[in-house]
Image 1: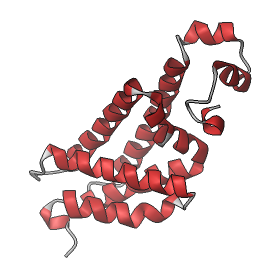
Image 2 (image 1 turned 60 degrees about the vertical axis):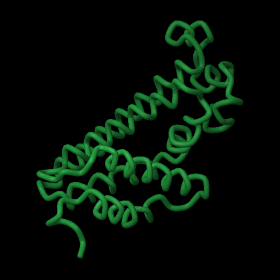
Image 3 (image 1 turned 90 degrees about the vertical axis):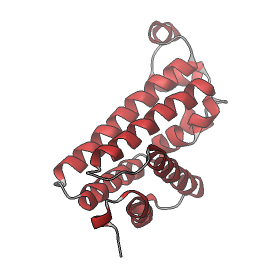
Image 4 (image 1 turned 120 degrees about the horizontal axis):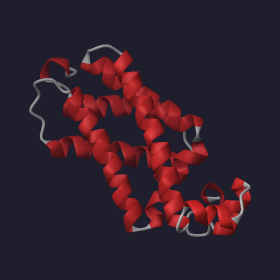
Length: 172
């Protein structure tokens, strides 16, 4: 419903109709539209995060390989689910302060994961958050334009390498 109409215009009636459930069933699980939206956002976010970290974990121990694998997995997942990507990267901003706080927690989780991939590199925490925010912005722009998300892979890899790579892994 949110993918079709946007968060503000989607109604509980739209949601229950699309889900094939009654309003009674909806309200047994959620207090309101925002609660439903945030539950869906968190579930999708958890799936995406697990997908990205699994790809990084099988890529070996090299920082560059793990970073590339994570970016590749992230973009492929979003490209495979364009409606979901639009909802959770664009419509989240329309859902109010609780939704934005939820998005910030997700961004924090990715920044922390990037920090974990570092070995002996004293990059300030703000840099990890800046890279996450920049990547988010670039993906949102592509989604709004209807452009190919997968073409962002070299840009996102260059961004992370320039800002976060351990000195021995930085491009020369």
